[in-house]
Image (cartoon, rainbow over all chains, first blue to last red; front, side):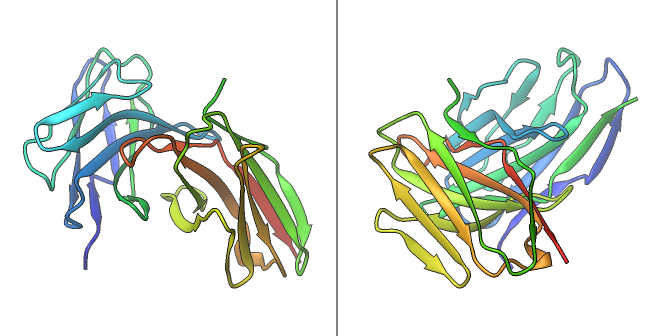
Length: 110
Length: 110
């Protein structure tokens, strides 16, 4: 089945550590995105990529980094510079019919 | 000004009721519009695209008003299973940046 896979589903991080969230898609979509959602809030765009080896900052990119070495993969690293990283992270890919999401990763800083 | 604005609700309605949500967008050049549904602690899922002429999918009807820059979602004969948060999504220029509203919460009660 085609889709977007995010892993892990739950992630716990100690303060000061970097962590990487995985996102893989087999939908052959060119564009991919990372969003952050805080409780009771909407989605905020962190980074997006239109094509391999190219990506752009979204509205809240500080403290995050991404790479796009393959069309299928768009990992997100949450660095120690991100002051409030506890959130629900959603990866998406898109075509003309809209954006499609993975199941998300819940990151908690302990 | 936010790209997309929605009334957060909640809208509390009885089963069988008709309920409508509006969503306003700020960029008059916006090209594509969508409604998504998000269940608690889950990823958003595409409910329907919104076409210029309006479109219907079963009990759901979406409308676009370009002059007033808003889109609407009408749900007829509400079911308990319709309880969720409904997100309005706008693509301002192309398919590389989707803006999400913060969502409208719907509670359908017996």
